[in-house]
Image (cartoon, rainbow, N blue to C red; front, side, top):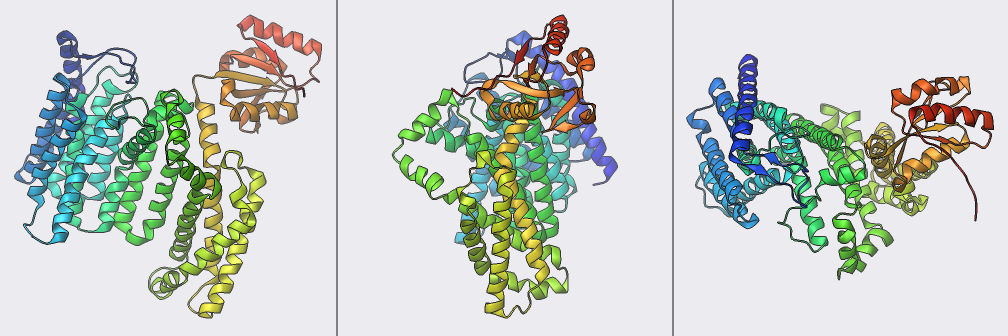
Amino acid sequence: MGAATAVLTFLAGALVSVAGGALVRRTAIRAGAVVATRPDRWHRTPTPTFGGVAIMAGLIAGAAVGGGMTFAAAPILAAVAALFVIGWYDDVAPLSALAKMVNSLAVAAFFALTLSTFESTPTHAALTMAAIVWFGGLDNAINLLDNMDGLAAGVTAIAAVALAVTFSAELGGAVVVLPIALAGALLGFLVWNRHPAKLFMGNCGSLAIGGLVAAIGLTAVARAGTITSAAAAALIFIVPLVDTTFVVLLRRLAGRSTTRGNVDHMSHRLVAAGFSETGAVGLLYAVGVLGAGAGYAIHVYGASAWPLAAAVAVGVLMMALYLARLPAYAGEDFRALQSAPFAPLLADLTFRWHAGEVLLDLVLIATSYYAAYRIRFEGEALTTFLPGFAASLPAILGCQMAALYVSGLYSRMWNTFGLHDVATVLRGVATGCVLSVLAVTYLYKFERFSRGVFLIDAVLLTAAILATRSSFRIIGRIAARSSPHKTRVAIYGAGSRGQLLVRELLSNPSWDRNPVAFIDDNAAIRAQRILGVPVRGCLDDLDAVLPRVRIEEVVLSSPAITSSTETRVREICGAHGVPVRRLHLEIQ
C-alpha cells in the first residue's frame, strides 16, 4: 500500500466521520437519544449518543477509497457489522454484561472459523479457543474503556495505526486499509468526542471498533504464527488490556460485581490522584504510544527489543500499582479488602515478606543483564557470548538479590524514597556486581564473559531500581502539579522554610494546594527553579506575577519577612482579591 493511498484513506475516513458526527448529533438530539447522567457514570451533562454511526460511515468511506472493500477483508467487515448491530440493540434496549459477552464470543467463534485450517490436533484446538477468548475479551475491553471523553476513540486510533505499521506485511494491501481507515474515522470522531464531549459513540461504536481491531490483530498474529507477534499485539493493546484486568481484580477484591459499571477505571483514579480529565486521557494516550512502539520493536527487531518491552510492561505495572492504592467507592474497596479471609496472607506477602518487591527485582535483574549483552555485543560476537547469559543467569540472580537484601534496600519505603536512598541502591548493585564477577570466575573461569557486560549491567540495574522505587513519588508529584482542583499558591521566600513548605504541599494532598511560584527578593536566584518551582521575581514583580501565573493564594514562609514587606504584599494581593497567609511552625 502506497503512502499516497494511505493518506487518502485516512483523510476520507476522518472527513466523513466529522461530517457524519454533526448529522448524528442533530438527529440524536431531535430523537431524544441522549445519555442521561448517572452516579455510576463519569459524564455530568446529558449527551447525545450513537456516534458509532459516524465512525462506521468514516470506516466504510476510507476503506472504499483505499480499496479495502474486498473478499479478503469480508470476514473482518462481517464481524464488525454483527457487533455494530449488537451494540445498537444494546443502546436501544440495554443488554446485560453477560449477554454482551456471549454475543461477542459468538461473533469471535464465527470469525475464528475463517482463520481455521481444519486441523484436529490438541494444539490447534487450544489456539482456536485462545483466539476466541482474545477476540471477545479485547472487544469488551474496548467497550469498558469508553468511560471518559475521548479515551476509547484515541487509544483505539493509536492501536489501529500501530497494527497497520507493525503488521503491514502479514495483513496485506487489502486488509491493512481497514485500520488506517478506522484511525481516520476515530480522529474525525474526536472532534465531537474530546472533552467536553458533544457526542458519545455508544455501544454500537465501541463494540464495533473493538471487534475490528481485535479481528485485525488476530489475523496478523495467526498469519505471523509466532509468540513474538502475539506479544507485540498485546503490547499494542496494553491500555485496554491492563485497564480491564485492573478493574476486574480490584472489583473482586472489593466484593463488587465485575460487570456493573462504576467510576473506578484507571482514568478515573488518575483524576482522583490530581490529574485533570484531559491530562488523565493524555497520559493513557502516551502509555498507548509506548506500548505500540514496544510492540513494533519486538516484532521487527526480535529478541534484541525484549528489554524495551519489559521496561514498558514494568512501567505500566508501576502506574497500576500506584493507582490501586487510591481508594474508590468512598474507600469501600479498602475496607472490603481488609475484611477478606485472605487479607492476612496479602498483608504478609506485600508488607512483611516484600514478595512483590523481590519478584519485581528478579525481573529487573534478568532484564538488565540481558540488555547488557545486547548493548555490548552484536553479530557473531553476540552468538559467541550470549550462551554465557543463560548459563550464568541463576548465579547473577542469586548474587544480586543477596546483595540488595544485605544493603537494606527492602527496609526502605517507596512513598519516601529519595536522594537519601540512592547510596543504598549503589551499594547493593555494586556489591552484587562484584559477587557476580567472582561467581562466574569461579564457575566458568570467566571464559566467554566480558567485564563490559557487568559494568553496563550495573548501570542499567541501578537506573531500573531507582526508577521503579521513585515511581510512586514521581507520579504523585506530576499529578499534584497538574491538578486543576488545587489552589495555585505563590510562596514568598525561597529559603529553607519556603522549600519545606513546597515539600509538604507536594506530599500532602489533603492540603489541596499546588505551589506554582516563588517570590523572593534575592536577585541571585531569580529565574531559577527550586524543587521544581520557578522563582518568578521579587516584591516589585508581584503585581504582574499574580494575574500572569493565575495565583490564588500567597503564603509568607519566613519569619524574617518584615512587617513593612508583609503590609506591601497584602496591599498588592488585596487589589487582586488574592488572600495572604503566613506559615507558622510550632511543636505542641
